[in-house]
Length: 270
Image (cartoon, helix red, strand yellow):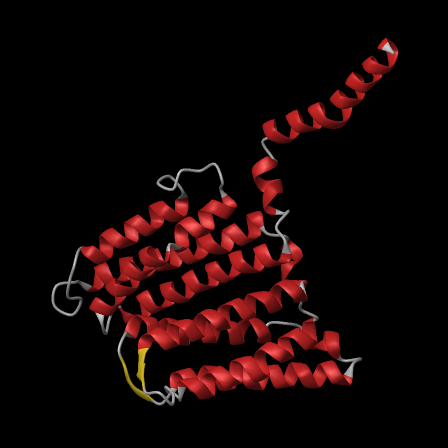
């Protein structure tokens, strides 16, 4: 009996204790854990990054023509918690105040807060600094993808499709929050230009992600070729509908009756 108990103890150390010590003390653990994301988790993280990148684009594009709108976009980055949502998944042990993304955003916030009227008080050099900082954050986000997400992710149809789905759903939510519409979905006006611009920029991101996929992978399956082409048309229509402030109900039908079903069929989503 004693011999058997000793064997149990030894097995416990070999199977449970030693691997646990190695796992929790290894310097590689922070990187390894990022590669254990589920497809849904990876798509959610990528979607958050792409939303942040879309808003950075709006901050940069509005600096010269509408500085106040740029500042409102900076405020919305904080409201949406993009940085903490990303950091919490990539750097579980890192303080929110010490990460590179946080530091860079704080620098951007200081630059933008230094002026309330870009056309009158903000110099051309200050505008360039703001644009440069948005590019810096954009690069940081790209580096996060390279460091913490599998390099083969661009070839993972499931993750790409789920990311597109997440983005297009987010775009519709922004669109609904950014417009005034009647009971029939007809748009009367834009009430929140931050939300409206986000809806459009995220729609563009969705379109870009789909068009970056290698269409030749479907060449031996005519049904999938047609589905892919239909998706391209639908996402292009979706982007144009947002751009032209089309009827909200019309856009919702396109999303739920065409885009979602075709994504599910083409990429075997559950």
